[in-house]
Image 1 (cartoon, rainbow, N blue to C red):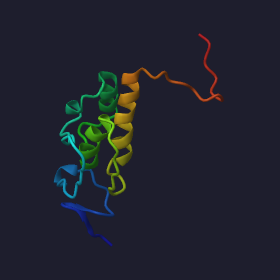
Image 2: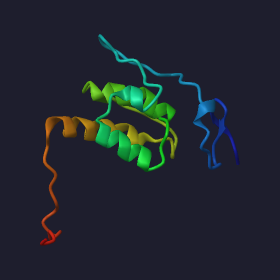
Image 3: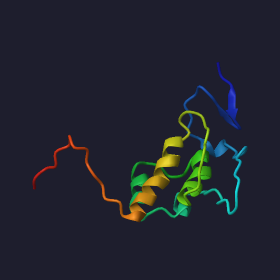
Image 4: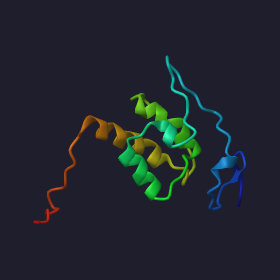
Amino acid sequence: MKRNCLSGIVCWERFNNFDKVVLHRIQATGKDVPQYITSLEEAGLRPLLLQNIKNSGYIKPTPVQKASVAVILVKRDLSACAITGSGKTAAYLVPVMNILLEQGVAGASPPWVKSQKL
């Protein structure tokens, strides 16, 4: 059974044309709410992170990412609801990884991972 979930996208189908989705029902409160981004470059991500995203084959943000990335980059609270496959995980993790890189947080391996000796 198929049903319309978002403008132009039908649920229960594999989809990858997010250009048809219209950003609507976005609610932001407070002062100085950041504008949504329209491209990955516009987000102001660290070059290393941006290049790795591009190397993974992603060329533009999905609607939930457009609305979420800028909010998280300025360390505001966010609650996002979107259909499966819409990019929610990256919408949260990409800006968090960017913030960690900016803060110079050192990476660490879990204790069960043995480092290789060179």
